[in-house]
Length: 136
Picture 1 (cartoon, rainbow, N blue to C red):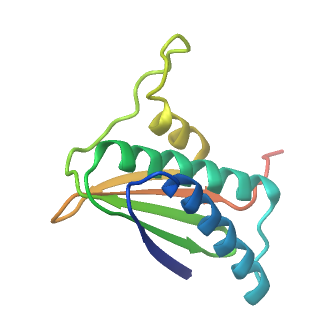
Picture 2: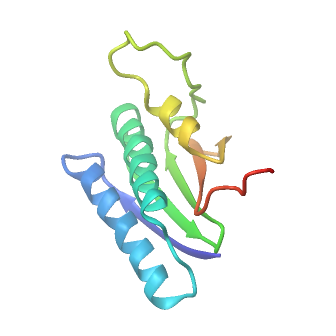
């Protein structure tokens, strides 16, 4: 697995910076290694990064750590923040304004895990690079 990590400060522009870093990571992985990232996987990676970093910046004081990993099968997006509270995706409610981030991440990810760390939590989403083959 190819990995990269970086820290963000919860300030204006950190979400856009996180998306840019994710795109740069994917482009570098494609340039340097035998991996291909389809447009859908690239878009979903940006969406997941955006939602997870938004939540971390909104609800946790201090830095936000982002780690990206890629294999020939999937992209992993892990976001750490300092709040140990384990969030849960809420039930779908089209009338609710906001608070759909984790629900969206769960819907577009192959897997989603939330792990408490000695200080804070780590949320990791795996995005498939290709759709699973259809059964006949």
